Amino acid sequence: MRELYTPFVRQGNPIFVMDVRSSEMVKYASNNFLATKISYINEMSRLCEAYGADIAKVRQGMCADKRIGNQFLYPGLGYGGSCFPKDTLACMAMGRNAGIDAQLSTAVHEVNQRQREVFFEKIEGHFAGEGGLTGKTIAFWGMAFKPHTDDIREAPAITLMKRARAAGATCRGFDPVAAENVEKENPGEFEIYDGLYDTLRGADALVISTDWDEFKQPDFSKIRSLLASPVIFDGRNLYSTEQMAKAGFDYYSVGRAPVRAAKVVS
Image (cartoon, rainbow, N blue to C red):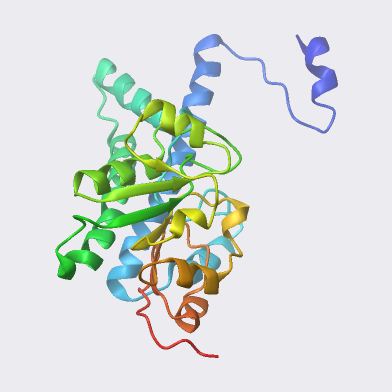
C-alpha cells in the first residue's frame, strides 16, 4: 500500500497505517472538529452582536494566536453539505449506542441549526413593521452550501428560502452552478434566475447566502437601482459596514452591528 500511494504523497503528505476502527474514526473526528470550529465562531458572533463587538476584529485577534490558527473560523450561516452534518450526527449516534452522552457534538449540531434561525429572525425583524414577509420578494445570491460546488445538501440558503416562502414571501435565487439542482430538488418552489442582477429587479431585499467570488465586488449603485428598497442581508460578511453605510443600504451581517440606510455620500 505504501508503494502504491507513494507517487501521490511526494509533497510530504503522510501515510498512516492503523487498525480499521481507528482509521474510520479519524474521518469522523476530523470532520466533527471542523464543524465544532464553525459552530464556535458562530456562537461568538452572536455574543458580539449582543455586546456591540465586531466579530471580524475578534476573529483577527484570535487567529493571531498560532495555537488557534485561522481555518474554519469564519462566521456565517453554519455548515452544510454532506460530510459535516452527517459525521456530527454520526458521532452523536455512536455516543447513544455506546451509552455515552456526546454533549459537545450535540451542542455543535444545535448551534449550527440555530444559526440559520437567528439569521432568518433578522429578515423577519426588518419587515415586521411592514406586515411581515407576506407579499414580499426576496432575492438570494448563492444556493449551494459553499462556493465552487453544485451541492445543495443541508445548504443554509435552501433552509432560509423555505422559511421565507412559508412566511408568505416569493423567493428568487441565483447560483453560478447549483441552480439546476435547486430546481430539480424543489420544483416550482422558487424562481430561478440566470443573471446575477436580473434576480434583483423589484425585489424587496437581497440575501447573500454563499460566498461566491462573483458576489464580492458587485456594482452597488446597480443593486440600489434594481431593488425596491436598499436592503442587504449578508450571511457571509462579504462587505464592510463602512462601505455599506456609505452606499446607503440597510445592511445586516453576522456578528456585527446592523447598518441603517443613510444618504448616499457622493
